Image (tube, rainbow, N blue to C red; front, side):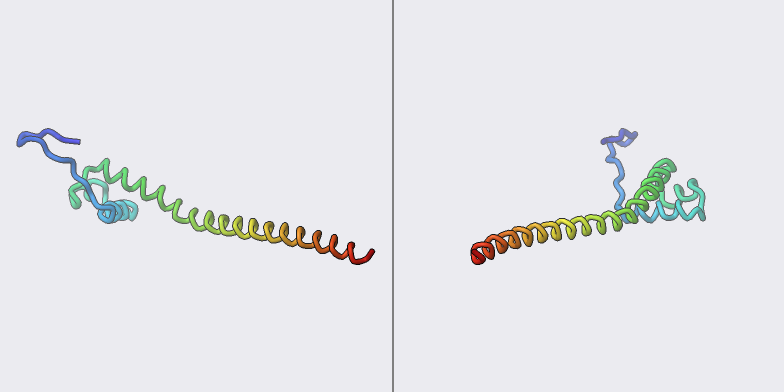
Length: 104
């Protein structure tokens, strides 16, 4: 999006993820006010608040991800075990048929 200023069109600032994380972490720490952070990093106060909120939401996702991964791993293991049980059942039934033929 272009922003109009006296000198002509100017591109909107874009910030690196590392910079946004640094500012969000400073906001979460609470050592400085949002206004002080805004002056220090030359970012609007509302942007700092948005980054702080996104960081707080993202933290919950980080810890949730480990549990979800272990659940998926367990599901894969269970599926593999059920597959093996099915295969062994088929082999067992086949062997029962073959042994019944020899017993006659």
